[in-house]
Image (cartoon, rainbow, N blue to C red; front, side, top):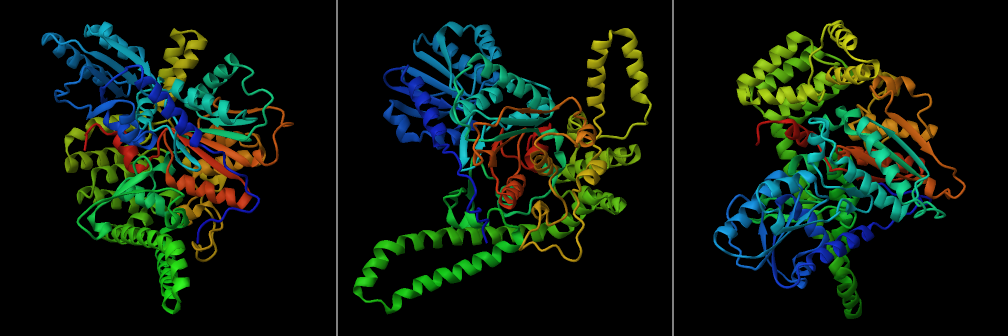
Length: 617
């Protein structure tokens, strides 16, 4: 049972234009090196590039050979080398080493570096330090919006999360502002904007500056998208830390969906080969089950298989003319559907096997207990056992973080005990990871109430009020309080259910977590859209530590049609999960909205933990 959109649901804008723009710009940059050239591509850019311009398009524009940017010397014999890279220091060292090796060998070639999505001054500095700045021409490919599906745009910047939320590095904020600016140029103006979070506020202000500089571009146009909602990932870590149970989320947790496609191994395909499958609305089978709770998927697929068999069986009593029609019109579609069906049944079986081995039920029960705040001691013992059995370093960390955030920090005794057990079980090299998690507010220790104020008062005596405010801000971010219980009560995140929660006919967004919890991020969006502002949510905003960081910006709605006002762009800075996407699709269906998602990258609990980890898997 797919989510049928209501007949009155607004039409989605056509995002294929973004692909065309990116492709044309890349071709323009490649043609600035006329003649044959070799292209070196950074691994991270290979999948996104493949969605924009495949090998044959590159060959048409005189790209001869393709190489991966890696740590070994390049064996290219071409006279022109082009590098397509992310703006990273290590990439600059790589380019410089090639150029300097050529100089030593007395070779002269042309070199061009194309940075995506933008170039940073630091990169040019490195080229200068290495003495090759004059030999290399630099350009940027402002490719920051990749349509992964009809309603999902990704910036494909997984490093955004660590860079901003751990290191406090603000360099990607300009990229976000530019992406929003491009969207409003093509599909704007956006009459109503809401946002919450520090990164959101900075990105929004920079975007507004860009709009003012180019004033008039979208003036007089009718808006296509009525509302934009921006949200920082750290406003809601809990949702991202939970195990996913909707089909698309489970596939991501189990097999890793990368740039909109997934590699299913032999255990899924029942052959000796792996299969790369593009997961989007064009896959008719997938589109009907992607947002479903996993418990419904098997039933749906077996029903589908029976229907398919019935359609095949129709050919038995056909005469030649009917048979000809059947073969020319229907057979191809049926075969395609058959292939997709067997892939998804294989994926389901593989997920079931893995989850039974992991004792998934027990895990989910513990997560639900943490979310609801029941039997905390039993949950802590479960986590200890998880650590002692060495189930998985990332999983154990995730459960500790979930315990910490839902409990507003661990009591010092528990924090020390869990940390010691973890380091003894998985190795002392994880020590730095704990420091990262603490800094990001993911795994913290409850401090006695007065320590902060004593330090703050000493500091504020030394400096002026304004600076003290800034320093106090810095201190309060060191002691991020999650206040999850209070927020959960205020927003009614744990549904009160009489009897069983029916997952076949979901009643609210909590179905994406088996009826146990409504994603906080999605509830915030729902509440703000209902009120058309943050009014009445002051207490929630205060509990989220975002008193200064929630804003509403509304323009006159005289030009916005009622259709555009039901189209909502949700921007997640720091990543969003497939569970949140499914929950908002559900909300849209209930309320007659359509949601469009823009995220810095699609994330899940494992990616979140990897970003914080100092031990590379």
